Image (cartoon, rainbow, N blue to C red; front, side):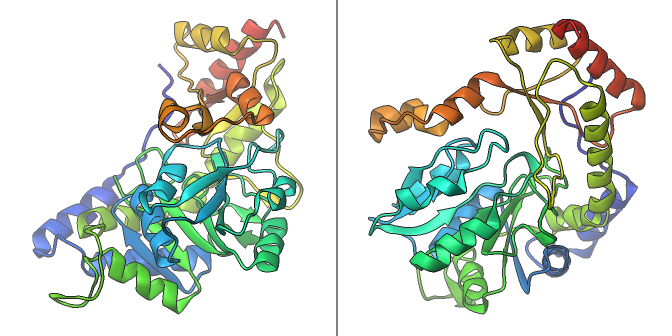
Length: 359
C-alpha cells in the first residue's frame, strides 16, 4: 500500500530524544528554547513560541490578541475544524467567507463584505501548503485595524512573493506527525511583536510571569523537551523535505490526466503538505475506491465544510450557502506526495489515476 503520509524519522531524532531523557530535563527546557529560536529563524520572525499542539497554539494566539466573547473572526470554511473551533474556545464567533476555487484558500476579494463592527481579526488558512493572498489580506486588515492570525498549520516555509508565511501577522503552525515536519505532537506561534510574544508565553504557562505568581488565567499548553528535540532535528531537514514534495508534485503535474491539478499563482512557493486534485463529473468517490483497490492511499480533505458540520448547524445556528466551498468538498481528493515516495510509487499513482480516468 502506498500510504498517504509517512513521518520521516531518522537516527538524529532518536538520538536527540535519548539525550533529553538522559539529561533529566524532560519538560519545557533548553531544547524547547533552541527549537523556538530555530523556528523563528526559519520563518524570518523575531519570536517563536512553542505549544503543545497546533490547536492550542491557535487558542493562545487568539487570547494573546485579546479576542473574546462578542467578537468575530473572519476565516475559511474549508479547513480542518480546529481553525474555527479555536475561535469558539475564546468565546468569539467564526465568520466564514467562501474560497477561491483555484487555490482552495479564502477569497480575499470577499473578505471586506464580511467585516462588521464586531470583527476583530482575520484568520487566513494557508491550506495544503499554499499561501493565501497576503498582500490583499494585509491591506484589508490595516484599513480596518484588524489583527491577522495566519493559520499556517499546513504550510511550513511556504512563501508569498518571497516572504515566509507566519511572518505577516501572528503565525500558527502544527507539528503533528503528518505535517511537513513534526515534533510528534506540538505547535508553534510566530510573531514580530514583543507584546504578543510575552502574552503567548504567559498564557501557555498557567498565567505565570514569575513562578507560582499567577497574573491571569492561563493554561498548560507547554511543549516538552522530548517533543522539541524531535522538532529541532526535523527543522534542519525541512528544506530537503519540501524540495522532495515539490519534485513529486511536478511529476504529478506533468503526468496526471483527466483531473485538475493544484494551482500555484505566480510568485507563490507551494510546499505541498497535500497534493489535492479536483475530480470532475462526480467521479471522485469512485476514483478513491479504485485507488484503494489498487494499493494507493488517498484522502478527502475535507468532505464536509465547517459551516455544514452538525454542531455548527444544529447548535450554533449556521445557515449558509458557500457554493465554491461546497463544490470543492464534492470534488477534492488528495494523493500521496510525502518525501518517502519512490519513483515507482509515483508512477503507480499516476498510472492508476490515468487508467481510471481513461486518459
